[in-house]
Length: 119
Image (tube, rainbow, N blue to C red; front, side, top):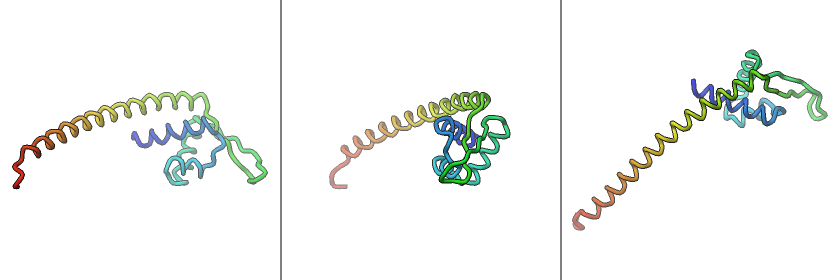
């Protein structure tokens, strides 16, 4: 579930920063397929978290802009809090593992110094 939440959070963040991104650009930036990006956008639209505005562009026949609704802003804030909590937990676990590896490496280095040289 957290992976889907992470994608949804990152998608909402990207749309807030740049509502004119294409689905292809969103998919590429998120590292997901174009179909999944389309599915996620339709899901956000269906939940009332984004609205889509189409407009004519001289280079393209039709382009879309994705805007966060107040519900989308609230969802983004809630997702940001959960995302930050998960990342902080992950950081603490990594920090503990790094300290453990440093201790292990230090002990191994000291033990290797104490070995007889003719082994």
